[in-house]
Length: 117
Image (tube, rainbow, N blue to C red; front, side):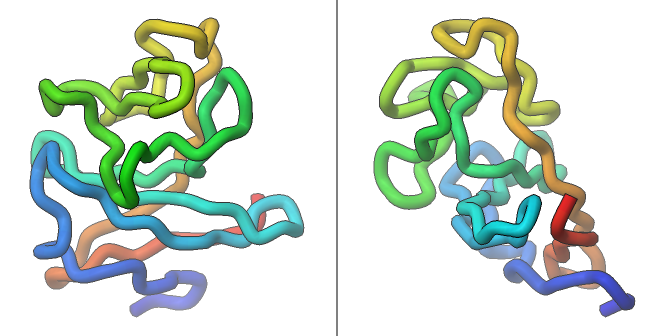
């Protein structure tokens, strides 16, 4: 693990298009909920906050994908997000995407690169 990195989970804990993993991150001086998912064999992390209203997305803990496994969905508003970018692709997010967090998968583990933006 390099300086400024924080271990989030083992890479094997994330199934492509499956359950994600929740964690907390220091963001702008506050502890905020976040999550990491695997999509198209790459890991992606975001603040766990809908672009429409700052509510957590998962409808059950760790369940961020819609039924097709193609989009991230807000359980409250139905807003849809592209898993690989966090961009709003439909619903009440009105073009406001998810806030991405820098993660890397290396040697079988997933790391958060830095915190506190």
